[in-house]
Length: 95
Image 1: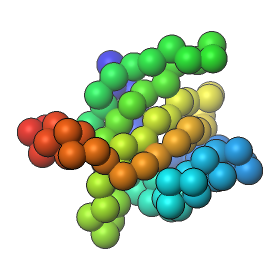
Image 2: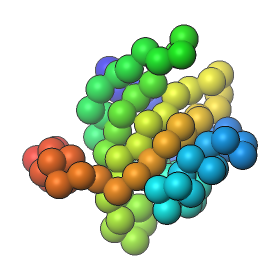
Image 3: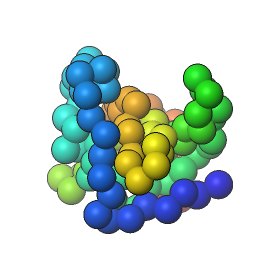
Image 4: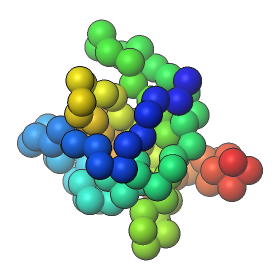
């Protein structure tokens, strides 16, 4: 259930996913950091014809985020990201 997480991953950003992150006050840079910092994958979801992953991660500055991503060929598309809920923080700490 754990896709590859290459540190040099190419990300697919457009207005739609940037706006979605902005609604949750998360920058694309923060989301990329969480992806690269060995996130904890909670579950796989099949949505809109593609496999998506719900993950928990931490930015370089220590901000903890939940995020959903998918892979499209060699690119990673982060669909959304938001501050972890208290329960998600517990799960993340338990690892």
